[in-house]
Amino acid sequence: MTSQHTVLLVGGTGRTGGRVLQQLLERGVAVRAIVRSASRLPADVAGRPGLTVIEADLLALNDADLLRHARGCDAVISCLGHTISLKGIMGSPHYLVAGAVERLCHAIRESRPEVPVKFILMSSVSVNRSGGLDTYRGAFDRFFMWVLRGLVPPARDNQRAADILQGIGTGDPFVQWVAVRPDTLLEDEVTEYSLHEGLVSTLFKPDSTNMGNVAHFMCELATDQAVWDDWAGKLPVIINASTIGE
Ligand SMILES: NC(=O)c1ccc[n+]([C@@H]2O[C@H](COP(=O)([O-])OP(=O)(O)OC[C@H]3O[C@@H](n4cnc5c(N)ncnc54)[C@H](OP(=O)(O)O)[C@@H]3O)[C@@H](O)[C@H]2O)c1
Image (cartoon, rainbow, N blue to C red):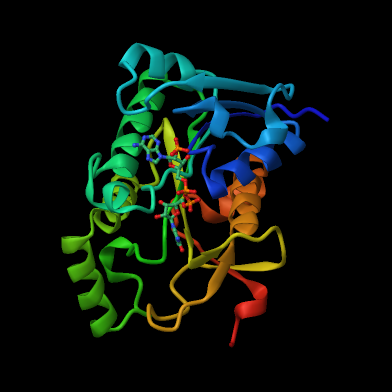
């Protein structure tokens, strides 16, 4: 099975990103994956037709090379995240996700695509929509997140990354975007899930989201124009259907 799509993927060696990669290849999508080490990719993707692996440090890649990798892609997916260790959380780069969003959006713009490129960011329910639109979050949750962003670099990074996209808005001729907000991640595969424009639970009574479901929705966004049209310029919250109302 082949499709007309080409996706540039960053974070493809991660737990969610690996699932995105597998699901894209199953759909016949051509994937360019920028990874620090190809040996960390899921074992069953090596040598698969349609996959191009670029071994490089994304934040150190020069502009010309990044532009070359971005040119001709109709979607870019970021599943980057800070390694869960003291060094990964508190060490540099503090702005891994936001830095990648900034560089990739710049490369997309430089490539001057005829049709806007779809930028799909793996974000988090800890991230707020601008303009106070996430009314479900009460004053205590908001205060807690404000403190967390002050103390924990990844929380600040995720908000900054989403703010860069929200700053682009919806009328850009070269970049359109969706920031997907999962709740507590589970290392499980695709099940039924639901999508919401705003938050549906508090930080202290969280829902769950399978990584497989995040990957499935990201692949739908990249390959189904109707799904894209529903969510472009938004920060959908994705949660497992089975957790609703628990
Ligand atoms: N944990 C949760 O419950 C939860 C909930 C909602 C949202 N999120 C967000 O979801 C995102 C992804 O989560 P995940 O668990 O799927 O991620 P993960 O398994 O930790 O994967 C992280 C990815 O980022 C890459 N990476 C890390 N540091 C890097 C660096 N300095 N330069 C280049 N690449 C780097 C890793 O590459 P290597 O393989 O080379 O290390 C890997 O591909 C994160 O942003 C997280 O904040 C998490």
